[in-house]
Length: 233
Image 1 (cartoon, one colour):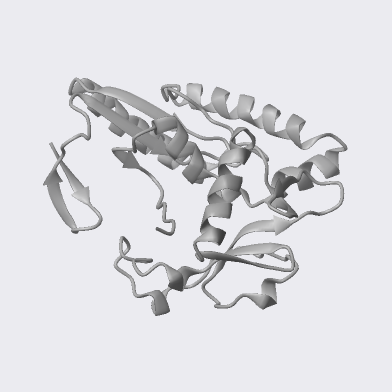
Image 2 (spheres, helix red, strand yellow; image 1 turned 90 degrees about the vertical axis):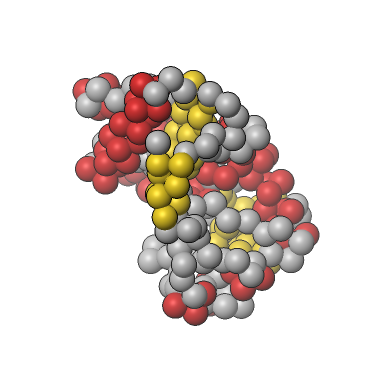
């Protein structure tokens, strides 16, 4: 069986890290509303991949997260006058119903972002300690140019890349050391979920939640994953 290798841009023979076993980590939805076609696409695609591996006789450990804390979840909770936890639990349940309706097999594990806060804090602190991240007025940024291989997997020159299109709207956004740097953690906002990061209080930036979840749940590393994970060395 051959699979396209993004790094080499070639189809290569698939060799699992561990004989007879495949570990997959697939980025799941942010649960602030019902899922849409963009959420359903990777669910169907990677469910198909998983089923083929199982057909070939592999033991597949399939992990897909739910991002259960995010600005959109908090906004929805405020609009409805309920807690963010209530919103996320409601739409996790709805997502699972929709997945069942699409005949998508349940994941081996569905980790929640809020269950991995300690891991995120540890990783952010490590990046800061090693000089790959920095803090400006309570906002923590990843310094893209400190990681010499940034963009290697996508085969793009760093100067050709653009930072995320999301509107961050956080204090210190204009204090980035480089336009390509991106937010890892945002400052606490009154009345919103927050966790302590070293001597500051930060609110989790949920789209950076996947790495510690993938690391913890797949232990020795994933054979496959559906998102790019890059950290400082």
